[in-house]
Length: 119
Image 1 (cartoon, helix red, strand yellow):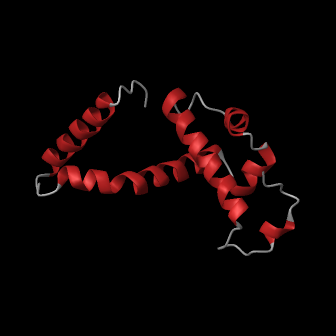
Image 2 (tube, helix red, strand yellow):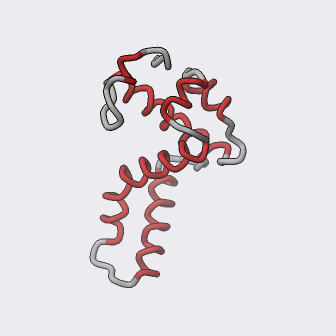
């Protein structure tokens, strides 16, 4: 777990992060994303993210300034991971409304085939 008093992260500059720091940041993002899907944004607190991830509040604020920033990062992470899937679903379709329908159908079918009921 990354401690805010650990100067190794602070000395790496604004654009680099230690491997341990990346692991901690990703743990926060993955946990927050899971909780936002399960409980909703309003129903998820920083304390929930701390409890579920095992990351201390101070460490969360080392990586993110607010719950809003965590949510934005979680959305960006999800989009980057799921964009290739969405592009496959809509390949060859030019009509924007049809693309949306294809995405919705594909996502619903994907989750239904796996027995998912949340998110």
